[in-house]
Image 1 (cartoon, one colour):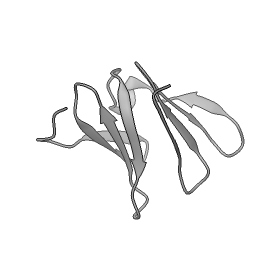
Image 2: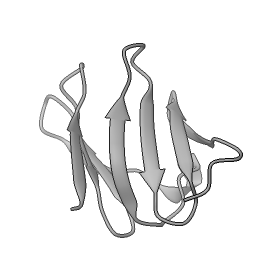
Image 3: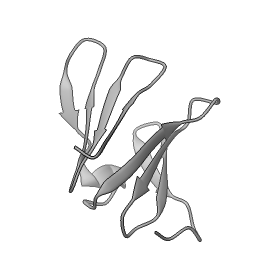
Amino acid sequence: VWTTLRDTAGTRWFGGRTQVLRRDAGGELQRVPESAGLPALPVRALWQDRDGQHWFGTAGAGLYRRSGERFERIPGLQS
């Protein structure tokens, strides 16, 4: 695990070498699947902004924003 975030809903996010895990307030641990739009690359930074948006900084694929259960790459921001 390279980075962690506890968001305002109490969910814990863990960014690692090839995946992102989340543990909800009830303790259930889930892997974020690649099919959600976040590539299997190192996640080095996690952030929640004041509007509640989740941001994921990757090594090699740039910046992603979580939108519902999907992840959207922010164009023009390569790492």
